Length: 410
Image 1 (cartoon, one colour):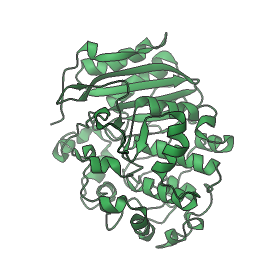
Image 2: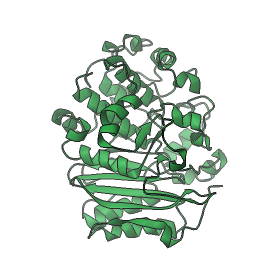
Image 3: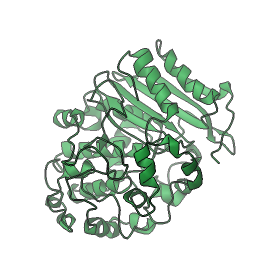
Image 4: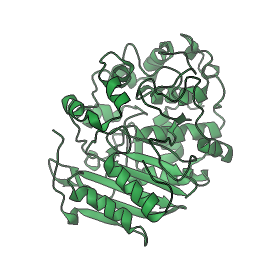
């Protein structure tokens, strides 16, 4: 069963600027209702930090307290960070969104992928959401061994015709694209560290280095697959139906790396934390996520994103020819340049210019350029929703409805 603990009010700390009390109230209410083990929330507005809250336990079993600098695996919220890294690389002239991937990585063209553009790949339209055979952790840790497996994969649908969530694989394709074009041959995680995280003094890593004190990393309290099935009503019907097929795209998209199970505590293993899985194993603080998106909501200068690229991140999603229904998740979705974009059922931010990515279990980071908001919420008790976990949604509603007075959040 998912761990539930009682968190005393004095274990919730931090501060908010005047006028943001409703956001703090929503954050505290999640703990009072027994919904959290440990969590943190940071909001920037026009470059200034206006909300900085944390509380509960870094480890709900040992009762180690969540600290201001506690880091945690953000699962698919990592995708948004990876997409910002890609935007940096595009701004630096390493590659172009509208060029074919095989212009930079010729082997990628195998299996009918020769016309796939970088934009289509980042938009989950390339059909390479699963890998056969699934790589081992050792192969994941060696880009020279992983790259041929990525390049050889045949698309699950005609590229550009449909889109489907590349739950784990997308980050490896992004990383190889950077590795092929970067003069230093760096992976995405190394590029993030050198070009963005270290210069900005951000606590965020894709591939956790040995130098990081493991006592700063929160323990993920997950759930067994059977409990996920019992909570299937929390998911959209289309996603529930997709998840019930053990041989379908949903199951195959999540079944990598081999012998790593997101439904258990495998993402607490240090060997899993240490390799680069740029779609799912970014480990960092809410402060880092929010600060990255704060910069992306404004000029992008501190994260090395040029005005042209920043403008492209705000553009509406370009849907594939087959429409919005996601081949993996079974529901309408919208993706653009590595990010999720707002939809009718997943309405975040104040307008369609917003961009970000939610993570498995409830974490979420995004930029809202119209209000100048950079937002980061992270936690270590996994929830069951596809997006808009009720804990996170209540906070976002308090911010955008109660404080900023903009459109309802869903």
